[in-house]
Image 1 (tube, rainbow, N blue to C red):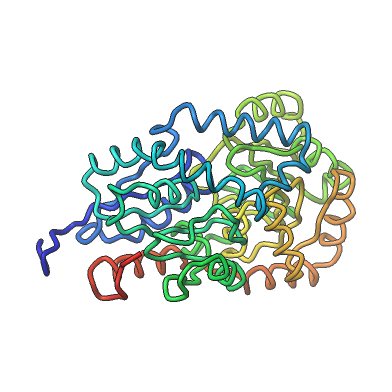
Image 2 (image 1 turned 135 degrees about the vertical axis):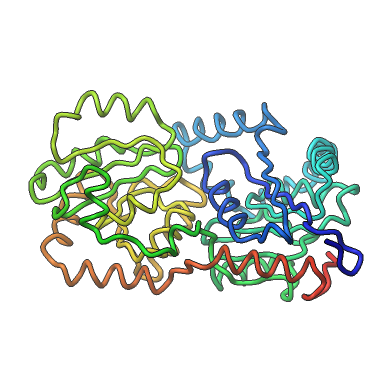
Length: 382
């Protein structure tokens, strides 16, 4: 199909950092709403283009967290550090971006949707990609310093304060759209009732269910968090999402699999069923995790947030009185007990999360991308 000089479907890259991850889930969510007659989504895994860089960053990140977490929190979104790093970026990024430019040009894509700041930076620093429309999608409830303010055709922000930060950093106001964080179609679809959802997962159908999540990588002291709820076993059952942390899942199942009210679950690509079965979610406040909970109106308890973006997501939740924090596994039991004993408080917490939910964010991002690419929206000049 050809219209006004454009040949359809347009090949569009959806770039994410690694899989599984929140960035990948957000890219998948947008791809689900791109009509195949208009857009052909091409998934681009940045860790495959830079196979050494991803593990290096992840290893360094975890080492810093383990030894001096305050240092990471300081450098994560510090304007002075960002300014000092700008000369490095200007010198190194144009060189580093060559591999990504080669990959995108080789794929013959007509635009890029990036759910990760690094790929957005690389694209804006490469002259060969200067004419490539770039759409940047934030996957946390904050806009940190490393998102590029220029060279982006459109920004999709999770909420108004993040949009305001982008504008303060130099992003043109007419290129910033508040859509929410993209979640997959399954989170907006009708779901079976809780009892049926629990039966499908092998859980007791009528028992209060706590879902503990460590994000896509299964980080945090998930085992201790689950065992902290032992005094409530019998009144509650606990399911633990271990993500891609298969070692944790195997070891925990081996050690605690005999407990009737405790399940450790391996990675799933369709997590909405687990959220649907839960009365209450406990875990790391990753942006996509929160967006999924909000889409399904699930009460949330903050546990084991990582410095950086998750600390800032925690700040967002606390400012809007959307969640409480368990500073340690010992703090979990009284918080869960309070919700267990007060159905009204549990329902109110769920309604509050739901009021901030944007289950159709992915659809709205996809619609705006199509509008801009096909010439029906505002000009794409960066």
